[in-house]
Length: 263
Image (tube, rainbow, N blue to C red; front, side, top):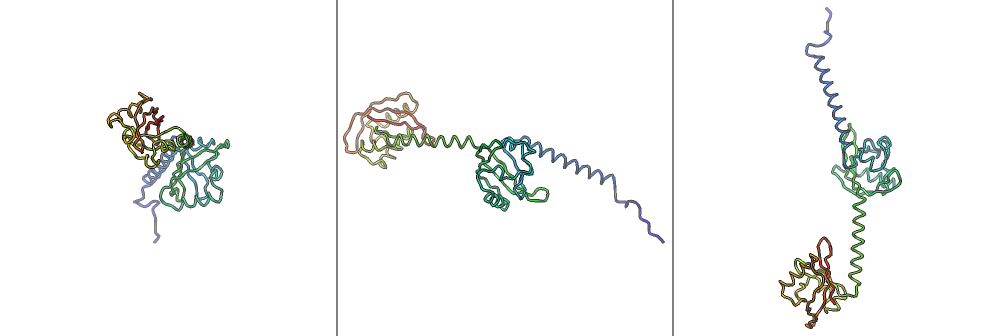
């Protein structure tokens, strides 16, 4: 007696299986299309590296940031655009990023295709993609931000030098509290207090006007309604002198402080 097998078991529905396969293919295609749309429209420069540090995917914004087209970027090694590390240092750093499960944010310097170098802020995280480990990076160009910060720091340094070394009596006063924030050497010599004593002192200890009037005059100076004042100031010795004060508001550490020049 022979054993007969039907071409398909009774429970095997070919149309159902084929439909499911088509559905899965459609989902994969839609996923790829969605991912590509995301890479085309991402504002940050998105990059995916393999374990060797080679680019396997990149957003249009990343390519534009470095001045390459996508075909040029794919397959490039991170050492070809990173300008801050030696190849050996970079290999160790990339390996460290792969080993850490949490996101890491750091600053780097990237070399563009034209040879210029930009500052970037990068957030990276290791992921599993297609069954293998990859490094997902989001880079943002902060060159202008860094340039602005350097210019501000240089400007503040110049102001500090001008303030500290000026032969005129100068103090920085908080117009809201009336507190002396800083005083130069000339002010220390004039008033007879150490600079450390002047810093933190209320201007009312020096200015002989009533406190309410002092507050009003400080606000006038802060609003640039008046820049020249005549006051009577008391020195550490108790001596009182008539002074002519020139005040101008300055932004120091985010606060508007009148710079007082007494003569």
